[in-house]
Length: 360
Image 1 (spheres, helix red, strand yellow):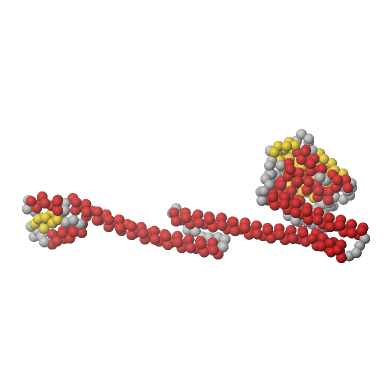
Image 2: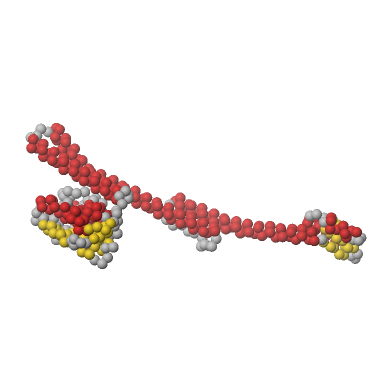
């Protein structure tokens, strides 16, 4: 039967109970309080008082134990998620190393780990796009080197043959003059090629920036026309122009002259003796159209898209002077001004090239 009363607490708190004859059990730590209470219960104490300080210690111990349990559970949960994320991350990195086109991600998009995973996937997509562009640039460079090599090979070979002949073969003064003229023709072709390549390179790499300014389109057309007057007269080709003198347009006059001259030069080149070339300018609501029409050989429908490729030349015109870069350069110039170029042609009936420049 329980007959005793005891008090458990820190030393200072239990002294008052001791003074009135109650058994006291001083403790400091929570573990000591628990052991003391257990002993008191075993020794027949009916009532056990626990002072406030010890109660705080006990509650604190319980809270600490709960916190530790919660941290342990949280660690296990996070450990599982971290393991899953690590697995996904390693899989993504394996895809990146292998250069695969697609990667799979967890559908859980509301966690920080998932956000990191999705950003990594986005980085991978950007890397894939950069890799694709690098590959395209590499292939384009290879194609360019091959095209230049092909274009340079013929005139260089002709120059070598001509110079070897001049050095080794006795010939009259007239024959020597003909060979020298041939050498001059081949060097002119090389110079034209290099000049065209320099213009194209500067335009494509941004070394030269097109500057659109409001200026007279009539003056631009007149300047381009002046470059083909002699060649047209030599082939007795009649050239007509219809352009409003008061028409003002925002455009890069210098480079538009270059683009228009390329069209006119081709028209003269591929129009027979006594043919006709017309240049007309029409202002539409959204665009201003500069049309160059001729009654020359025309272009087959199957080749009309290809003629704008760099160094492209139809088989039947290889005997004509040129390197196949003029139309490519023309399209680049017009496109960079926000316009476009189109062609309508029927073999044997001539061609119509239209430069479309924004009206505003």
